[in-house]
Length: 592
Image (cartoon, rainbow, N blue to C red; front, top):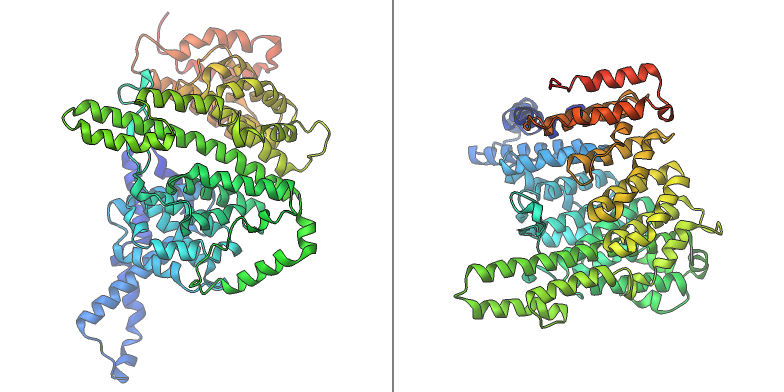
C-alpha cells in the first residue's frame, strides 16, 4: 500500500485521481467502515436487550457517525506511523486533496482533535502525534481547522509534550504557519511577466502577535530550551523560527534577542543574563507540565550539570544553526516586505480615487522600515540592507568569521561531524542572502566540496543548487566544478549532483554547455538509480522541446557529447559509450 503513495505525484491526472480514490476507499469510505461496525455491534445487541439498554434511532445514528469518524481518523494516523519523509509528503498531498473534496469529514477532523487533546502518556504518544500531523496536513486546504482550536494546539503542542518528543513542537509550528493566509504578487523579474512565479506577501498585521505574546514566548523556548537530541531539535527549531517570522509583529527583534541569548550562553555561560533572559513560558493551567518544570529546575540548579555543558559541542552547534537560519528567514522577511510594497503600489495605480485613505495604509509599513520614503526609495533601501548589512554588518554579520573558521577547521579544533555540517549549511545560507558575501566565499565552498567527507559533499551540492538559483551570474564561472561531481566516487554525491543539475537545466536556471556529456555518461552508471535519473533527464529535456520542431535540443548537443565521451580523458569503456549513444540516438527525429 505504501509503495502506491508515490503515484500521487504522477503528472497524469487520471492516475492521480485513481490513487486518491484507492486510498479513500481503503481508509475513509464510510460504507465500508459502517459494515465493519455493524458486524462488531451485532454480537453486542443481545447483551444490550438483556440489560434493558436500547438507544433510540437518533442516538444510534449519532453514535454510528462518531464511530465512523473515529475509525477514519485512526486509519489516517496509522498511515503516518513509521512513514519516511517522502511518504509523509505523499500522504500530505492526499490529505490536502481529501480535505478540499470534503472526503475527510468535519466529524473526522473533530475526532483527530480529540485524539490529540487526550491526556499525554507513553501509550497515546504516537496516536497524539499522528493526529497532529494529519491536522497540519489538512490545514493546507482549510486554515480554519487550526484557527478553531488555536488554544488547544498551543497549550498541548508547545506545552510539556515537546520536551519529551520534539516532533510535537515541529508539527505544531508547521500547523501554526498554515493558520496565516498569504496573498501572492507577480515576481518583478522580466521573464516572469506572464504566467511566471509569484512572491508571497506579509500576512495582515491583525493576524500577527506582539513580541511579548505567550505564543511567541513558547516558540522562543523551543529554540533555546533544553533538548534531548540534536537530530530532533534541528527540525523543531527550524520550524519554530519559521513560525516566529510568520506570526510575530517584529520577528527580527524576537530573533535578535534569541541570538544574543545563545551567544551569551556560548561565550559567557556563567553570566546571570543567560539564565534569566527568558522567563518561564508555559501556562499554569497545563496539567502535564508540573513534573517537567521541576526536572528542568533541578538541572538548572545543579552546578555540575551546568559546568559540564558550558561551551559544549551541542551549544556551539545550536548557535551556529540558529544564526544561519535566522539569516535566511530575514532575507525572506525583507523580500515579503518588498512584495507588500509592490502590491500596494499596484493598488494605488489601479484606483486613484481613494488616494488619501491609501496613503494612511502605506504609512504603517514605512514606519516599520524607519523611513518616510516613497515606495521606490523603500525598495532600494531594503535591497541595500539585504546586500550590504544582513550578513556583513550588524548582529548576524559579527558571527560570520566564527562560522568560516569552523568550516575551514584549519587547526583541527572542530572535528565533530554534526558541527561542521551545520556550519557549512549556515555558511551557504549566509551566501544566499548577499551576492557579495557569496562571491567572497565561493572559493572556500568549492574547496570544501573537493576535500570534505562524502556526506558533507552531498549537503554542499544541494546548497549549490539554491545558490545557482539565487545568484546565477556569480555561480556561472563555477558550473564546470559542479559537473565534475558527477564523477564522484560516492553514489549519493553523484545522485544529488544529477538531481540538482537536472532541476537547474530543465528550469533554465543555468545554460547547457558541453558539460552535458557528463550527464550523458551517467546513463550507463553502475548505480541503477543514477542511470534512471539520467534517462529521465533526457526524456524530460526532449519533451520540453518537443513543441519546437526547429529546435531538437538533444540532436544539437550530440556533437559535443560524442566529442567529449570519445576523448581519452572521458575514461569510459567502449560498451558504455555504445549504450549511451544508443539511448540518445532514440531521441533524434530530424533528418540531416
